[in-house]
Amino acid sequence: MLKVALPRLRYHPGHGFSAGIEQLWLEVGFGGGEHSRAQAAANPQAGLIACEVFEQGLCSLLAALIPEGGEATAGPPENLRIWPEDARILLGLLPQASLDRVFLMFPDPWPKARHAKRRFVHPHTVELVASRMKAGAEWRIATDDPTYQSWIGEVFGAQSAFDPGTPRTERPPEWPATRYEAKALAAGRRPLYWSLRRM
Ligand SMILES: C[S@@+](CC[C@H](N)C(=O)[O-])C[C@H]1O[C@@H](n2cnc3c(N)ncnc32)[C@H](O)[C@@H]1O
Image (cartoon, rainbow, N blue to C red):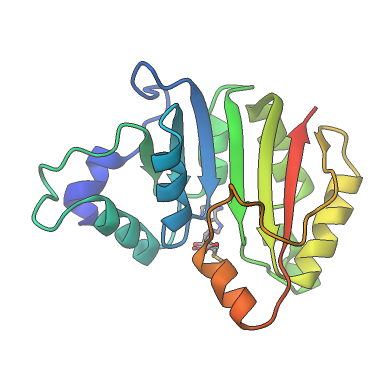
């Protein structure tokens, strides 16, 4: 699946999406890919680049997109492409002010303070993401991890590129569910949902 199907679905920086796709969206760490698929299906006007480094996650998304036996032939959805590497590498390759929306759903929390640099929300990464987003663009973040929740408040409280707003305690209806969210809710944890606006 990875060898045969991934090359046809892989995002190539500089090639973009086909005509008629007006917006560029990015999902960081799509896990099983449910959220990416739901967003791409509901938003044909947006080209979504779905990033994931975990092989099993890549296989899940490919399997859901490509019917069995169609690995070499099935036409991929026009508006969904995969970046099978660290999203930060892709961000470095995208043009300035090119992204209309970014999703970071339930990022790996790295709860120990000495691992804080591995968190995706980090002053350096926030600066990188900000540089690639258009003015007015939205960055959605959700997490159930209390350390990460405070960390988001801390990091976004110390910058001026985004208006962090106030996180919601219920998932907004237009946000598709994710597998990690389901696990968190089943375990009695309380996610928070941010909609940050690029200034
Ligand atoms: C906790 S899981 C959440 C998955 C999914 N978003 C969900 O809510 O079900 C975080 C995922 O992010 C991926 N990931 C972490 N850092 C990443 C990065 N820098 N670039 C791309 N994927 C990343 C991990 O491999 C993992 O699958």
